[in-house]
Image (cartoon, rainbow over all chains, first blue to last red; front, side):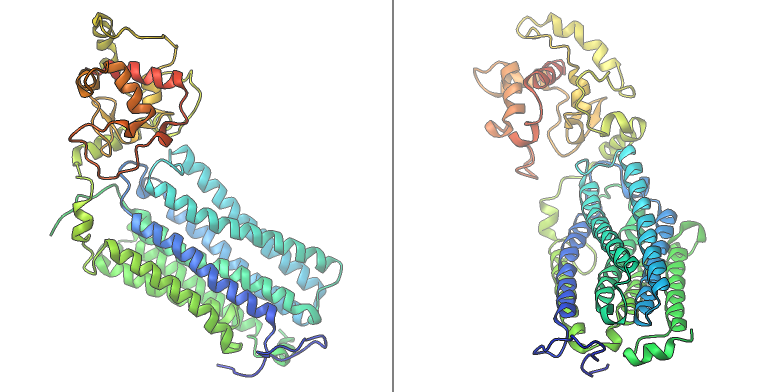
Length: 212
Length: 277
């Protein structure tokens, strides 16, 4: 674990008591608090898991293969995000634009998958109010989708800045902080995908309390 | 990538090749996870109860790889790691505590949770599932269009039999023929069918059985006609709770739940329930 003080590649680096850039530290604190936000929603889903008394149940509608594909898309977008940061560090203007745009497009594809999924679920009868599964599922994945959407907007803003040639080694921290947010959205999805799809996606209706 | 030595100056950021390797590992783990749980692969049965820890470990590895390499925590100051892990562990701890309130370590529901649980009626649940499958759109998607035709899949015989009886009852003539279909509201927009059973129409197990509401309503509240009683019970459900009604979930059936219905719609429901002898 490197304990060296963050190297200061740009001249305008301000003095801070921690020796670390405060914007970056703030981002990490925010991500830590966002963990608690998603932790609450995930815990709620897990507590109510299998408690729905009427359908549709996960096994009726959850499409694991389709969501595996959208998970791959999101993983790819994380890869293109690190490439965007790498291009920024070496002042590769064309690379910055290409990789930022690629990340935004991959994120949009993921959102497209989610819109398709939500629409299908709604047509199958799963709404926010029909049962506990619907309520907890839509709240959790919906808030994740909102995070991704915000990330796409942020990516597009950075893309416009890149078009103006304002991104480069001296402003690489801007891209890095965006990257942190984007990867965070990715790791939240890793958890959601495992719990709601791989583990919970095959849940059937209410099971009688066995009592041993 | 010839530029990797330039990145080296910036810190210890991984090279392009290392990023590709990280992505490949993440992909591989996801594929393994998918194969593990996909029923047609045939592995999930042999996993049994080890499915959960195996998947948890695999996704934790993915999680760790992303934060260590993509988010540079491995190469950054440890304070970043600590502020993030503090939030992560706090979230994890709260989640586990919440779960352990309801489920014991052995996977059994807690005794006190079981005592308050709704008695599980296998037959009713299966029936509810069948109805949901037969007419998912009509039954489950709330629609506020009052002129919606009666749900197609619900048996018509029950309703077909009753009008003759209903008109024969001198005490409760249908007050105002509003033209609204009470059964459609019951199964559709009103959302009643999700919790209440009316034999042959719905099989909800959360709320009281309403199969014989038309008969029972007259005897519930002394001095109150059946029609008024049902109307009050829909508009203000907590006004009077019949003895023997299981309060497994107090606070579910409140005035708020029916506040979206117009008086005409409630009246249509009353007429429909009066016909359930």
